Amino acid sequence: MRGWSELAERVGGTTRTSEKTALLARYLAQLTSDELRPAAVFLCGRPFPESDQRAIGLGWAAISAAVTQVAGTTAGALGEAYDRSSDLGRAVADVLAYRPEEPDPSHSPGIVEVAQAYAAIEAASGAAAKGAVFGALLQRCDCLTAKYVVKILTGELRIGLREGLLEAAIAEAFERSAAKVQLAGMLTGDVGETAVLAKEGRLDEARLRLLHPIKFMLASPAEDAAEIISRLGPMVWVEDKYDGIRAQLHRRGGEARLYSRDLHDISDQFPEIVEAAGNLPWDGILDGEILAFVDGHVLPFLTLQARLGRKEPTAQVQAEVPVVYVAFDLLAVGPRSDDGSATAVEVLLQIPLVERRRRLEALDLTTAGEGGRFALSHLMTADSVEALDRVFGEARARRNEGLMVKDPQSGYSPGRRGLGWLKMKRALATLDCVVVGAEAGHGKRHGVLSDYTFAVRDETSGRFVTIGKAYTGLTDAEIATMTRWFEAHTVRQLGRFRLVEPTVVVEVAFDVIQRSTRHQSGFALRFPRIVRLRLDKTADEVDTLQTVERLHGELQTGAEYLVTAEARKTGR
Ligand code: AMP
Image (tube, rainbow, N blue to C red; front, side, top):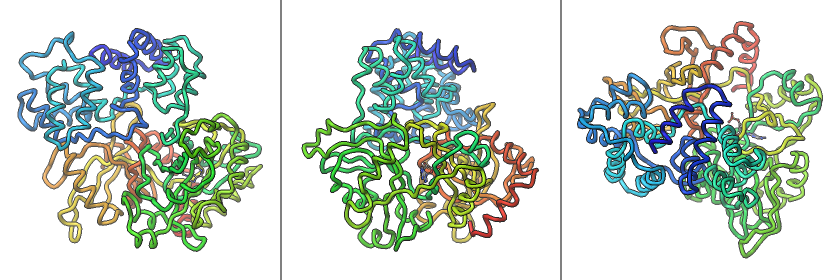
């Protein structure tokens, strides 16, 4: 693991893509298959593959206790070190440097041992047991290794490495075609598996597996109709941007499962959809959005929120907030295999959207399944800037967040934010921010942490910089859950205010962005309000200071004021 950590340090130290790729390729080429699998997964900044349902579940308090004990320091040392760098891995390394004797780097645990330790931490039950396994691991790590062990564990690697670059390095390391590595990555959804297949010359064996989620295709933001038409035009496909929960529906034999955007199995939360899907006469994978839907009307996200995170909802909850699955893409399809073998499933990722849509419509989803649980996205086309602007206006009049503009010739690229899909949102709609501080509220909100301080990411320094503070617009139940989470992930308590681990993402709406010295970002939001928790997003995905600067610049033109005023008129 020391070698891996040295590599990570070097990759993080250069901004040149070609140099990163070369460093990675040289490193990966000399690993055994057993080492290569976790090494590649770790390079994506996660202890387990993304499609793995496991989460390590080790909070700040347990990490802090273990570090304090291993380093023999006082309890506040880690918090102080964290204040200096806002980087937990670095803070742990700084505190461990106080040990009278640092373990010899040549004796630091191997990559496979670290992978086993992560699995053991996940499997241990309770903070004390998890902390003990973690402490035993730290004990053997030199400072640099410990820094990266912690960065992976907390999902905050931040060495400027995208998965695409890692795939390019895998191709270079084993002299394989980059396109083949990329395809294998799409199908397996596991970069560790892909790396091993590349090493062993078995990329052709990569298979898409039903009931194993693959990454979701993402959309790039775009606000300007002229820009969209010039990029994707002259003819684009347009769908409403539904305000629900993105979900991948897998069908195999009599079994169906739903996966969220962060690849978690959410079948338990929507049993009525899963049950209806069990009867569909084919095997395959749909991409779509779960919406609250009554009498032909989509209900606002706020209504759907009542069902979020609720496992096995009662019949009453199901009746109060009925849901529908709106499919907008078909990723794989084949005849139903009642023995569950699903051998004849055809993968559609690389064929154009126009063909995938044709195959999706041929499934007759709206008539299939019981209880009208399925619908298709409403497809429109636009072939000019004026047409796109008009459709956008109509979508907004329907109180819609905006539009998804899709290139009919585009393939489905899992995990990529490409130009195949563009999201055209209300200009100046919302910012995704990470919560860095929490405070108890007043009155009814006394005793719960209901005031959040949130931040955006500064791309130049990689740090989070605060931009505002707001009372949450969350439900009491959500506030209660988040209070427990923030209490367990408090980095430092400063009177009423708690500095918390920067993990929870919230979507913040506001009226205007102003320059201000009140917050670290140099900006403040006027009338900020937390619209919702974005538990499906990681802190890496929050908006950047550079986006804030751009929005502020655009604001000066006055154009956004019109849109904001219109948004008010339509009640959003
Ligand atoms: P955002 O969450 O703001 O990054 O916007 C992208 C999200 O829009 C996707 O992850 C989907 O959940 C959602 N979405 C809503 N309607 C559609 C649609 N018709 N096609 C694709 N994505 C959609």
